[in-house]
Image (cartoon, rainbow, N blue to C red; front, side, top):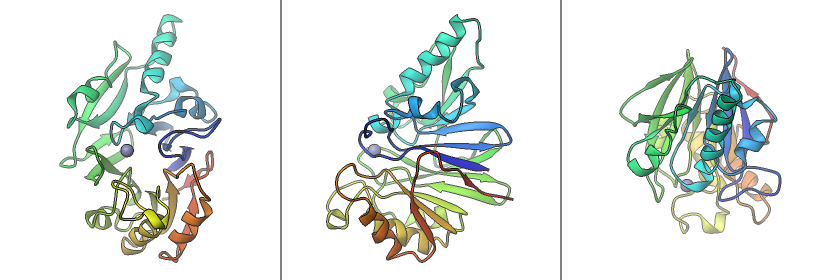
Length: 246
Ligand SMILES: [Zn+2]
């Protein structure tokens, strides 16, 4: 399987970029993970929109869902042009029914409920979830094919349960939204040192940092992660594919 960063920012995007989002692909099946601000534009550098097969949403903050409406319009316009695409499933939790309802739109997209109690099959991926600590209900995700896995923390502050959830993953994509001076003071997010600690305790092969802050020098976040994790660690780079071979 292959996973490509589509956006890397937390909160709002820098010019000509997007908030944290990833495209995961295996055997021609394409699944978008989160769909925040700028994502629809950035995604088209990697995939025609009609080739998207599924979307999974971690939580309903704007930097993770802002472009859902534009995605729905893109399907509707294709339909009007006589090139209808299959109904697009958008997976999200049902702890917020008002926002969950917005995942369904005409005949174009349909919301599908997920929870941390069940594993869902999305194309070739076996996907499981783990609740995070964030101001709103949010789910970390694990995408598995055979014995290979990618774990994405989504938005969270430190939570011990994430160590078990991420244990043995080939790739951990962790949020690292905080500079070290804010760790433990800003609710709902982690710093680089915590992302590194999570990677170390979970014994993962590789760590990629995302949901980065727009201010300051993000190399400091990378350095903080490298101070707690000896393995391969880097800042997510838009368009760079990470391949996990069987
Ligand atoms: Zn959030």
